[in-house]
Amino acid sequence: MLSLKFIQENPEFVIERLAVKYFDAREIVQQVLALYQKRNEYQIESDGCKAEMNQLSKEIGLLFKEGKTEEANKAKERTVVLKELIRQHDEDFVNIDSQMAALQVQMPNLPSSLVPAGRTPEDNLVVATGGTIPQLSEGSKPHWELAAQYDLIDFELGVKIAGAGFPVYKGFGARIQRALINFFLDQGRAAGYLEVQPPYVVNEASGFGTGQLPDKEGQMYHCPVDGLYLIPTAEVPVTNIFRDVIVEAKDLPIKTTAYSACFRREAGSYGKDVRGLNRLHQFDKVEIVQIAHPDKSYESLDQMVAYVKSLVEKLGLPYRILRLCGGDMSFTSALTYDFEVWSAGQGRWLEVSSVSNFESFQANRLKLRYREEGNKKLQLAHTLNGSALALPRIVASILENYQTPEGIKVPEVLVPYMGCSIIN
Image 1 (cartoon, one colour):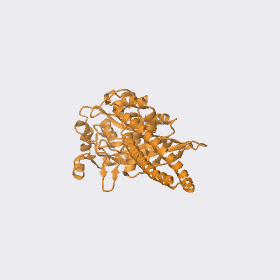
Image 2 (tube, rainbow, N blue to C red):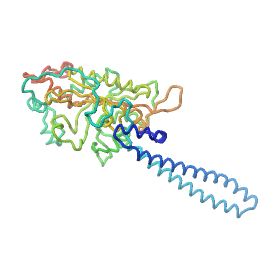
Image 3 (cartoon, rainbow, N blue to C red):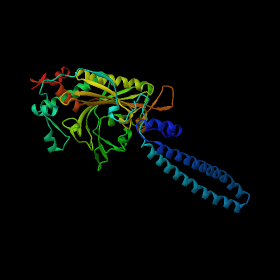
Image 4 (cartoon, rainbow, N blue to C red):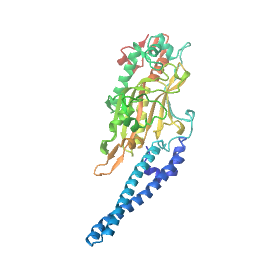
């Protein structure tokens, strides 16, 4: 989250930058400034009361020694009044700090200067493309028809067991899931990422730390009896490994990868864009997370983008990389690159990864700080994360792009994991 001090010192800059995300921050900023002013006034009053208290405390003893009992008692009565005023000011400080914190968490992260202008996905900037869009034979099918033809995914059985958006993978369908997970994790380890296996539920503090809570869009599944939330991405538990942690600058960047199931309510989703594997309530994903030095976090971002690109290229999928415009960015991101792969059966692009730099926004919530060697001063680190990769649409693209009259070819890099070169 943005620091209150930064908001106070740069109000117009904050308003201007958040307008790029189409977030009108003026009213909140003005409220923060007014609360700061009120707090300063209370602080001056409280300091005056404390100074008077100290002076009276010294005088009371002398007055009694000098036999000035009446004056001493009046001074004591005054100290009672001052103590109550100080107590009231302490309550005022707590109340004001609470109000400022409530305003603070409503404000999204400032977008980087690299963020293009625009409100909708159509305004995102295509920065790179790769691969060749396949020319399929007549009668090519979308992935949900291929899944039924080769008995790979049972969507109706998932509805019976849990509801829409919870598919059951079978046979080669389950094997390709496992193959992709292992391939992505192996690639992550080879690229220097430490593999971890996190919990699939988090507490409120963890959800707040990465910016999922307060849950403004109602996307998280909540277990109210236990006060736990099903994770929407492994980013949440993995990044929270570093909550309330001080790291040494010499150890940065810290690179972590994890596989997890992900759970999203996807409230309001409907229509053709949610058919098949296009949008699910539960899906598998391998995530990469970096804790970086502020001076090098955009270098880390470029490395993460290059890494995700290498995965898509190894799978042989046509792709494009987009730099998201202000209106299409997440609440927490300072700069995001989306990866899309071509869906040959549907004739459109499908998002399979977002790679983001959050700068110090999450770190401020997490109290994640670093220390330079020989310097006791603590500073906020930068956090980054990316999907590497989300499986459903990757599977959809593989099924559609690799379909042939003889069956579905298996991408070469997955053959050792699948134990076959074609699904038929």
